Image (cartoon, rainbow, N blue to C red; front, side, top):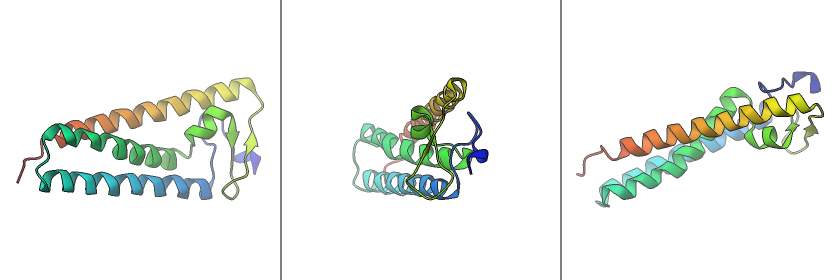
Length: 127
């Protein structure tokens, strides 16, 4: 299975991808529930900015699933194409560097997406 690993491109297989997708859905559900509660209870608009956290979780999960790349594994020089749990190490220094760059990119994209949604949440009118 180690032949599936591609530095800076793909470091997880189907089981790990499903796990990341699950976290994406959890983040979205929490974000939607939070906004519904905030709007219906009439919380002041700045409180809506806290939707940033679950949106970041959701975006991170979906990005990792879609890109077949785990941020944690990328930063630690690991990969897994089997069942959840056991990992293998990336030994080549240049491969680890590519993985770390990809991991940082995913985190930055998650933050940008979450910030955009948090900003847009301020535009939701109060009932």
